[in-house]
Image (cartoon, rainbow, N blue to C red):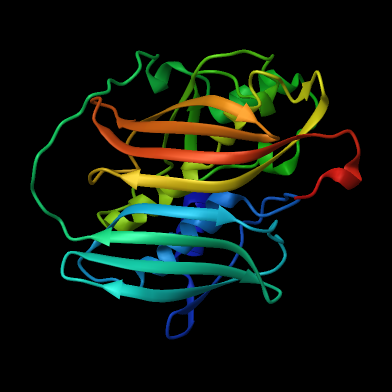
Length: 291
């Protein structure tokens, strides 16, 4: 297990402050704001700490304020409903007395029933044939000094099939894909695998909304921020084995961009679906870069 993955698992363990109240520390990589995938994964972990014998099948979340990387996050869990087959939790992430994020999570007892899959995994190169994250960064930045978060080690091994805009992609249309897996063995706790997938699901999805325009589009430099995030877990899976994340952005309008993703195991089984909307605001002034 890499040190960065060990660190992420530590962040997901959370500190119990009181009944239904947990505290989470933050990643150390320097960013101007908290990585949304971290807050979403910790929120799911907090909700899961209040559940027994059920596993998350869906979550729906909203990013309310930018998170401060220097301040621990307090997670409060509302046990909305406990049924025989389903349970619902609401999680609010708080910093400095204000909500920065909220999430509704639904848990389901394992059942058998009808099954079908009417979508195929895209035909893309195998992950082993693709450049690593570090190799992509080195080539894309051509010797320039990248920000710490871009050059630092990652808990998830990411292999982009298509170059993302934050690594210098030229404007283009169409879908994009990336392979990912945890950088080490996660054991057999399904909730941990779901938390790691949740973390990884926010790495590049919103980037698809800016791909057709580029980071410096016809209307000027663009400010991007996630507004909401939803995941449906279709079946158990392992996040420490290669998963393909196929992504696209069907629509952008009103300074908002919509993106959706489908996550497949390597054998082509659809294991999760993701949707996200992000702020896509043209701006040329630093003071305008706020929600």
